[in-house]
Amino acid sequence: MAPAYIPISLRRQVRADAENQCGYCRTPEALIGMPLEYDHLYPEA
Image 1 (tube, rainbow, N blue to C red):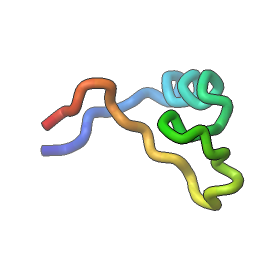
Image 2 (image 1 turned 60 degrees about the vertical axis):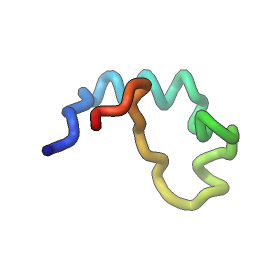
Image 3 (image 1 turned 90 degrees about the vertical axis):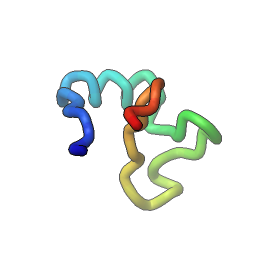
Image 4 (image 1 turned 90 degrees about the horizontal axis):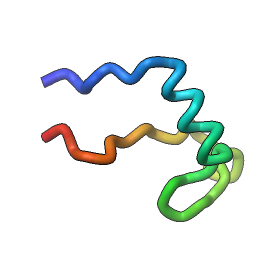
C-alpha cells in the first residue's frame, strides 16, 4: 500500500508550526543533520 499523498502546502504549514523541530523531542532539524519525516496523527496501517 502506497503512503498517502501529503500536499506541499500542508508540509510547509506543518514545518512552520513545528518551527523546524521534532514534534516529539523538539530537537531542531539542523542539529539532526537530515530532513525530518512527516507522520500521520492517525496511523495509516
